[in-house]
Length: 294
Ligand code: GDP
Image (tube, rainbow, N blue to C red; front, side, top):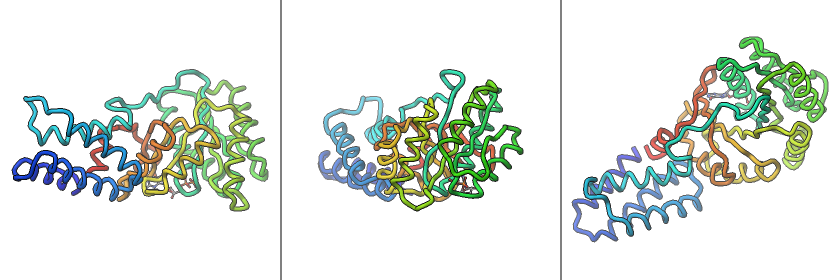
């Protein structure tokens, strides 16, 4: 376990004969290895570990805390800070009606997540509507409709249309007319021509047409090092406000998410922990950091 390695290197620092500064340097090297093997982007690893190193060298552990615990505490603090510290994210909408637009590449679990979110908010007592605007994956609308039937949430879609912008606009208008409180819009993850520029352009056009209250990037825990670039590009097209990480039940540690957060400044709101409709959890920063380090 990586965290054990970290603890080992702290122990070495305590018992070894090397100087404090040398021990800190050794510890930082271990930490860098741990973060890189958890798919955190290299540049981010360096800036994070530099900060930690500075704190370790400049601050002294309070006398009541053992140095070993203090080392680990600083690492947890700095990583957790990136994810919002001790606070769980706010998931109750600030206003009603509230429109959430989901974006992300195909296969990450966007459509599944749209259904999970709808279920999450329905259970909380909100009147929810789902809009299927992924016109490039033929089965997406059918999939969304099945989920909608299962959880009894209405789904708006136009089966033979490829007008994603129009569908999104009409769907949101329809649900607003029906006094829906939360409207979740599923968008395409791949464009018909396989061109990413077109996908990003479509995202922007949908954004302009529906003016969502929140844009949520859905990423897969296994995305790894690519997460930084992907999140940056999406963030340029439409400002990403929140992130949902799917497939946290898999083996990937989700370090890519840390890079996505750094690239966008967005907060992680939920994690997906399985294929089932209720396998969605509110994001917990400390638990996530423990997973990345462990
Ligand atoms: P989309 O192309 O992004 O809309 O992806 P889908 O919603 O169709 O999901 C792709 C696959 O990932 C499906 O087989 C889903 O069941 C699966 N999936 C989605 N979320 C999760 C998750 O949190 N955990 C696991 N294990 N599988 C998931």
